[in-house]
Image 1 (cartoon, rainbow, N blue to C red):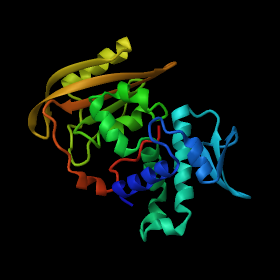
Image 2: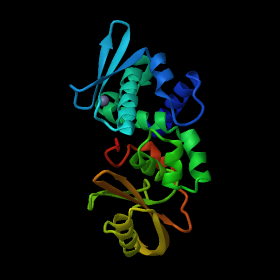
Image 3: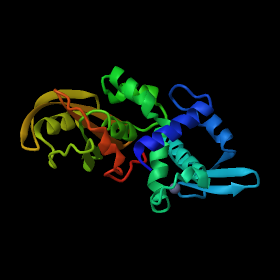
Image 4: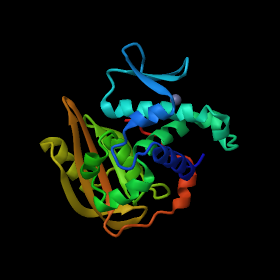
Length: 252
Ligand SMILES: [Zn+2]
């Protein structure tokens, strides 16, 4: 089940439920699928249960709002594919279902058809997009941005590298480069947005890039997200998206 296929599935669900702008309200979608949400303390993250009429989705009350929305949307994916007609003859559905449901969740909460336009209007700025897609995490938004324009995404949690990846098919220097280091240190120290232009060696080519650094701090938790984007942007080959996601899908 490719990315474009799932984005059509989720977009049709939104249309059926009369949802036309972000943030996506899961209420009408839950109603459409005959599902109710139960907030529980006795569950790791989320679970899907059959009810007399329809479904019950249990979610842990300690999850952050974005995480909770993502888990609920993921479980809605399981409900959707519990109908054999929705399998579209995909032989991998069984083994890939968890990944599919996470793609489903990402695309349901952040529909590609809206995001492609909103991201461009926001000049690919993470904070501007987060103000609109309030129930989608910064991490998922960064991941999705990397599908729209060529960039490297680097995420640090409490001073440690958590993940570094680039747009599909683009490749990237495995080590952080000087301008990235500088932006990271300033954001981590001052806790505010920073940006810098600089040169990095990207696949053997010296490229001028813009590095944007976003603090996503919460209490003592310090997450920093860097978006490294070539100043002369590179067009992405959408056919790459047919492939499965190259990284474990973010769920935060
Ligand atoms: Zn699942």
